[in-house]
Image 1 (cartoon, rainbow, N blue to C red):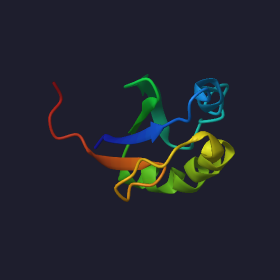
Image 2 (tube, rainbow, N blue to C red):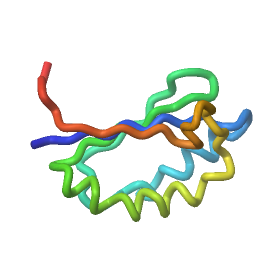
Image 3 (cartoon, helix red, strand yellow):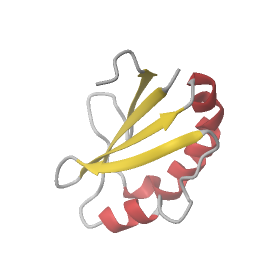
Image 4 (tube, rainbow, N blue to C red):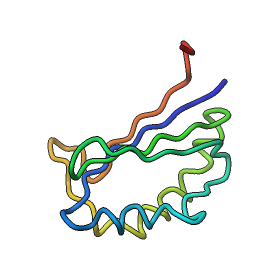
Length: 97
């Protein structure tokens, strides 16, 4: 069963290039990731969307994802309301449109 994860980020002004560079050239090639995308949702806001073969693959990749996050943590802003610097959700596909 395919699983998706979505992580929202708010990047500090002027740090968009550093944020994107932290994911380029295989830096975000986590074990089990089928495909990943970063979309820009606002001037400083982005979402990373990953597709995984299953929940076990996503869980197994978390340490590698945290390692990547640690390389660009300084360019992120707290999102407020207790979300911290990342706001992540994941789940299984229940309807393929």
